[in-house]
Image (tube, rainbow, N blue to C red; front, top):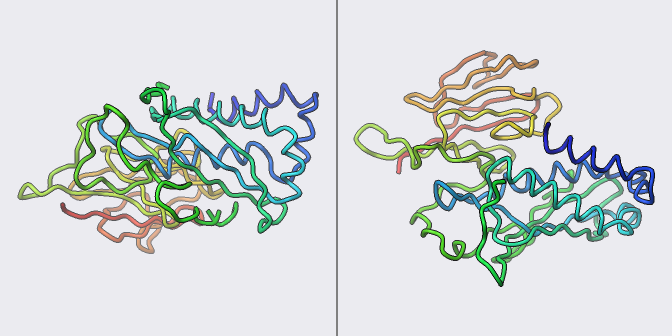
Length: 283
């Protein structure tokens, strides 16, 4: 059973109590839950083969009417959302540097039904991090600028963690590194970096295959109703290719409807109403 489905079932047990008023809000808790998952994926930082660090402190900004409806239940809702983030991290094998917290805040610039999520990584002051084996509004303006602020990765590696590589890979991975670690070598011994860009976010490709789709189980989740749960798969190699996985609406690569295509640096892939740019570079 998926993490979001379990979250919905936990909330159903509270619907008949005082918590029921939450569901009268224009913004539904499950929408926020999905945004928190994406926030983890988009801000995941790979430290080494065994550790990918994600934010643990989240602020959900709501319009004034939505905040007034949800704020009386912010404690319960925050605990449930933190539990969802913990479950999702266990599923993705993400690591936290400190306790998970989810806060609600009012934003006067948002209209009813819109929200945005900001996040940051806060290290625990009493202990080293333990692996969890577990914005334009939504519509999500970009996070506030400022080193170490919401939406920014930690300034240094977790205490006791191996040092980061001199040139870290592009951030925003919604998947785990390949079991072999490192990047594949190009002819002549050069290393090849591969990544995709979706709506301005980079997602590193560090596995032999990368599944894209609407499901939370996909390596990179695309929140688009025109995208199937497991829509397509990128396979790295010389050359890299993309394969349709029996999706409803198919894929378009560089303007051509296809079920399989070779990818080159700058290839444009359209799934549903979402455009994905494939990138690769040596070094």
